[in-house]
Amino acid sequence: MRTIPFSEGESPLVLVDLIHSTRVRDVVQSGYCTALKSDTLYDIQVMMKERHVGGVLITDKTGRRLLGILTVANIMKAFEDGTIQETAEHHMTKTVVTLDGEMPLSFAVEMFDKYSFNMLPVLNDEKLIAGVITPRDIIMYLLSSMNEEVAKLEESVKQAQSLIDKTAGADLDGFAQNKSRVLRYVTIRNDFNTAGKISNEIKTVLKEMGIDKKIIRRISVAAYELEINQVVHSYGGEMIFIITPEKVEILAHDKGPGIEDVDKAMQEGFSTATDWVRSLGFGAGMGLPNSKRVSDLFIINSAKGQPTDVRAVIFLDEKKKEEENRESL
Amino acid sequence: MKVSDLKTKLAYEEVCAGNPDAEIRAGYTSDLLSDVMGNALDDSVLVTIQAHKNTVAVATLAGIAAVVICNNREVPADMAEAAADEEVAVYRTTKNQFTVSCEIGALLD
Image (cartoon, rainbow over all chains, first blue to last red; front, side):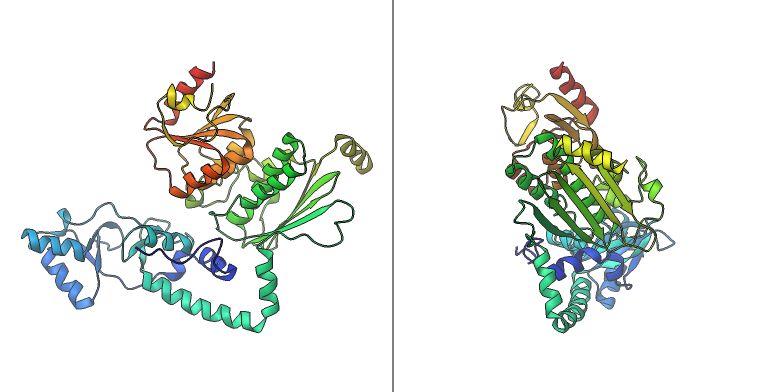
């Protein structure tokens, strides 16, 4: 089977951003067919024919709670086995792969790539049916979004170029003379597949510079946590690393939506991450406390509806650290 | 204990050998990655059910030598690839985190 031609590393950033920042619920089509588990397979296949659908959601009497799914394949098997007059209850697929409406669209794309389903039920926070999503929905949504995006891009080719450039860390001028380096990276909302990549690259750079292993670990921890925070909580952002012989300075700047209560966010164990983010192992409420703990200097600025700015500094030289501390006292 | 002991002494299924001769000095059991990041010691083995590529990223950054995926969870192909690239050992087992922690703990003593 051909795989979906989309890859984190190779697809245009605009598309990657679109697929990660769009939620499944934004793409869901409202029309879907339901039946009860007491309905016969025969009646259900009549409905499927009339309404031109390949699958029916079997629900409880409210029509909102999902019990199973019945597809053309089930119906064909029932015709073959001579069980077409039996009820859906014993013939439906009961372990159904569902999507959470809050998940990024990339999850749906991945699921359709992985399994041969033609539609997937989408559930809301209360685990009730919010709709179904089909590859067609995704195509329609992406095409119309891409039309908009391409129009925007055409309008501002210059801006697009700078966006593309941002995917790779680039040395900025002016720092080369004094053996300092500036590296700049972009983070994308909900892009868990490449999350951690920036911190890893920084780690490699620092290793090459021969920096002490323990200090590299501290910088990596701060970088990783700030990177993950941007991926999980922000609309995307950028991370700038300024490496000088004395210190490494991390500037993490995102596009919002800001932290409502910064003091709370700095407490260990406090997290606003959603359930599915937690299911990936994030959202322990340790991100900001971890990055502060490993930093010599840690400043965070944020408010609801505002971008979040973090400046974390780690000194490479113990003496320098003492000097700077004295100065700041 | 050595990374390879996870296979030879504990019979966990090897997904990626990593650096088999590396010494394991400590262990950490958690499914929350930033908890691991914040608290795991260098040269640890991580006991978790979190079978995801990001677990390898955290292991690399935190200096974790081996990851044991418990409860018979599948290791996705991209996780195995990342582990091979980063030379992080990945093992899997049907046992749960508690049992695995006890088994590894006994070897570390």
